[in-house]
Image (cartoon, rainbow, N blue to C red):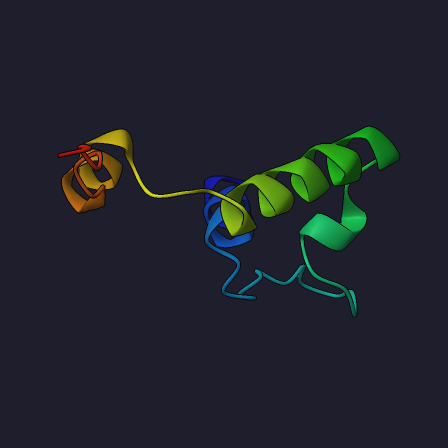
Length: 65
């Protein structure tokens, strides 16, 4: 399950299969688990830069002379 969550967060598209079935491990989850995985995927896709990096690329404020 940790592999599936990590794959969803990083949106790489890797899944583990289930022996004897033609679906991925996350395909066999119940509906609530699929919704949680959906939010994990959206959060991973839309994550911004960390705050420490954001501050380092900000331009200094313009000063009126």
